Image (cartoon, rainbow, N blue to C red; front, top):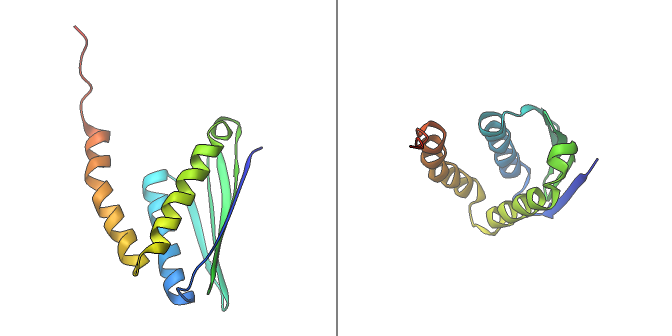
Length: 126
């Protein structure tokens, strides 16, 4: 099975990194139908996530995010694209002065389009 392993250093500190990871877990549950569990620790947190075709963990420390995911057969065909999107989005967030606010804005900006796309009627062929 294809694996994804991404590590990124940050200077957010554990409280801010924790907030960002928790918000990500909420969105993963809501938008990606992931089942997530969040374990808060003294020096690190662990987000475990799973759904059909993928399972993994996001470890959060005061100076690092580490994501490990195992993709199933069907999603494995898209490994490179999935990994590139995760890297692009995480790197973009970490470049912001306030990544938590940037994440919230990104979610708000994508919500109307995603909702419209899901509920828009399909055109009929004549």
